[in-house]
Amino acid sequence: MEEAIKVQKVSEEIKEYLDRYSLNYCFTCGSCSSTCPVTDTPGMEGWDPRKALRMLVFGMVQEVVNSRFPWVCTGCGKCVHNCPMNIDIPYIMLHMKSLRPRDQVPGILHKGARANLDTGNNMSIPQGDYFFLLDDVGNELAKEECPGFYVPVDKDNANIIFWPNSKEIFADVDDLKWWWKIFYAAREKWTLPSENWESVDWGLFTGNYEFTKVFAQRKIDFMKKHNIKRMIMPDCGGGSYGCHIGMSWCRKNEPTNKVDGSPNEVDYVYLYKYLEELIKSGRIKIKKQENSKLHTFHDSCKHGRELKRHFGEAYYEEPRWIIQQCVDNYVDMYPNRDNANCCGAGGGMWPGPYEDMAAYHGKFKYESIKNCGAEVVIVGCSNCRDQLMRRVPKYYPDYKYEVKYIWQLVAESLEIEPWTKEEIARGEAEATAQWKKLGADDLLYP
Image (cartoon, rainbow, N blue to C red):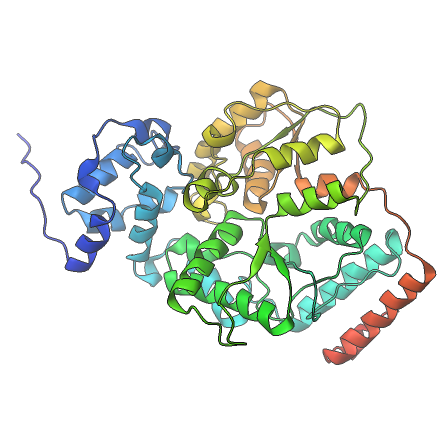
């Protein structure tokens, strides 16, 4: 006969934290477990959100902290979306991550977050290599189809700041061109930072609250220093959601910004609203791709369900409208919007060490894609894109589909009004002056 579980005593700090979430309100109804991608995952037998919550109620905090469960939780929010008592399980699991010693964080996540803190990006890419890449790929785009184009760095009084992703700078360099083409076509006054340019917050993935605040504050300070009007919220959930959370913490802890003494906040726009603005205002012209392949849209958890729950906004209709300006053949997969399945990449699962489990999580999204018959899946998150393009097809190869960023689809549908000779000459002159100012004299516009 098994011995009954006894309630364990926890520290006052842990008790105070868990009391915020009223765990005793849990009905143990199983609504969370029935929708959680971790439930029945091979390697996680016996684990689900209901069990994790009951363990915490009994004071078994260290057992949860030591387990894999917080690290294979994608933070998708389907559990709390279904919970009749609205218990915020993803935030609780985030805190369980924070209690793990940093040298015991699985995989490369803490190393990447630490690299970002120390060098300004997750991969410790040196500034010289970063500058070379921006200049080299920018020159390619100028020669291919956008004469006069260059990548503006540390530009004062820009209307838009765009944060690149280190995996694009490191490897997927051609993916940078999609946004750059859109900025070129819109004649946007935009910029990138020379330092601390990483868009993705791996502090969020590791439960490192201090790192998340630092990464967000750096973005705020850069915008204040250079008088930039708006940022495009980074696309990845660890970028946009992490930045959103980090900025809210910064406003709360330091209401006044140290750079200029103004309120410690900046204006931002989500990528869907920005693209919608450009199209509706006529700043960019789109030619619909007729007789196109059948397209569908993947609802990112952090741009939809979780963003709506914590910040009162979700981007469901804007991306669908944008896609249908670009193609004439669209279908929704099911389930979608608030009820959409997680792709399995969230919470650090894409760069994390548990690939088999992440792929198992992704089978639900794979089935949704297969069942709707889509040939092209449009995404608005880089981790979702990598998961659906690179990992899921490796594990479920019997149905073929393409994956594209929504900004890629827009860029492919652009009708670019040619720049004038004066605009081209101005762009080339600005590029030369910029690299001289930044001390990169070997990167002069050819």
